Amino acid sequence: MSIYTVERVMYEIAGNPEVAKAYASEPAAFLARYPLEPDEVGLIRALDFRELTRRGLNHMLAMRAFSALHGRDRVPEYLRALKE
Image (cartoon, rainbow, N blue to C red; front, top):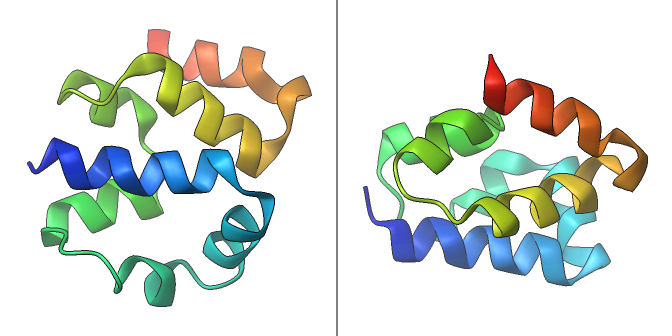
């Protein structure tokens, strides 16, 4: 897994609401701009933060990306998903 590229994707989603909207509206087209492996694309499209963090994605960056996509009020849901 190229953690640098995965973290770059998450950083861009977390840092800009317009980027988060672009990802949410067309994930496949959005992710095609990055040199990701097919399994990485699948994990990001599934928003499998548990597996992504297990593979090295920074937990705080993952939480920020989740918040950007789903809103801060759903962070407890993100935390539960990590524990499952």
